[in-house]
Length: 421
Image (cartoon, rainbow, N blue to C red; front, top):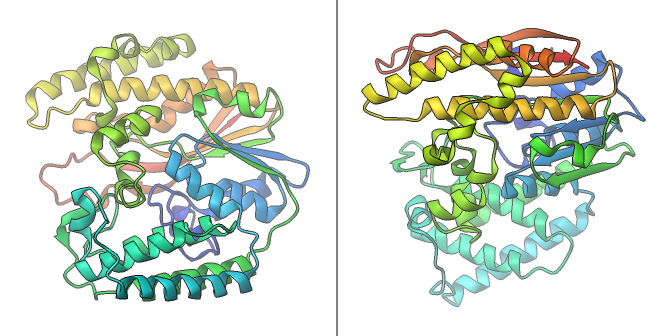
């Protein structure tokens, strides 16, 4: 039996074919999608949309159910992961043969001492020992030399191999080169890549996909209806960024540096961070957020919520002056609710009357100031024209930080918010 407490986590997906190709701590359970489709009688002929599709959980689940879907994702690398998982109708015999050839040719490159031209940002050299880095570089060279339609499959396999072989602390949420996993057994990159390819090929063979249409868009959730049209969607199911200062751009720094997509913090800021919905203080540009700080869209939807949030933002601004971290939680909070308000309005326009908009999210307490995100979003949805909302609490959060003296003591929760058009 599925635990609803797992609905907001990636636990179920870690063992699910294709879903597990890229471990994404910010992800949620594929079983949630299945449960909500059953609850609201979403089936063949229906259309599901996900404005924060991430690594494709909603779209991939819809594919297994034979339901059409549209997913939108602003993070270019994460969008590519989702697209690769969705485009997985490959000949498994060819996958296995090609994987063996890639490893064999990569071995040959090593014997030729083909490594001198590798140039990465320092982070990559800190994350791997020399032997594995040479193997990873040789594998990368061979994968990029592929001309077949299966190249992205092998790129994703090698991407997953990075966290399998790094000597750095690679757990949630970020890579930590200074924290070496001392108890971790050293893993050979060639062997791990081969294992990963075999696992993924088996997943292709076992995954059941029913006939349906799917579109993944690299775009902005705040412009959802440009991809769905008006009044066409039967269910919107998503997990937006939480108001918890989690930097989604930094989560993929090792992977994007390895592939040469970006080379610095500034690169990531320009190409990723600045394109995402506000959810972390690293996105805040205080001088450019004068209008956002006033939260005009929030005020338009619900004046009472606007006043409550203004009070919270003001308190956070005062606390910022007294805290050593000097984090801009005030502007982050204002920007977050301005952005999510735009998504709510877009969802209302995209949905058919009587249809649900379902969000998995958590509340927050930056600097100890509690922000009941689930309640606020439900009330904002009413202001946007939705007829009703309900909240299902699925688990408590923050328990593992209970003994941290610098951590606030506010109890937090994770919830499923369901609003009806």
